[in-house]
Image (tube, rainbow, N blue to C red; front, side, top):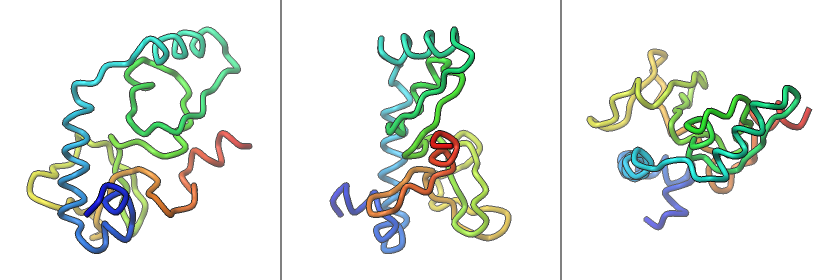
Length: 131
């Protein structure tokens, strides 16, 4: 599968193990990533201004690492996971993905908490930052 196929619900439904493997690889790369000067500057600016929030399309979570207080992640966050059935969100470090697809207590499969290609931007952050 091509990356654009892996980053889609259709790809997940066709081969969820491969999609999890790919996202686990991306997470392993991001584990070593550090916020850049722009991440740090925006975090500092946002933390100095009480009425400031920041809407981003990146899903790497580096704005949180930079200690940005209010971030609206329009494309979600790769470090979060969402249940297909109940939509419960669980942080990446709470799931064991080494044995394949992780499952929610409700029985639904978790998927990476990103907005996939071809999906509408219905992530909860969209409503928060646009209201």
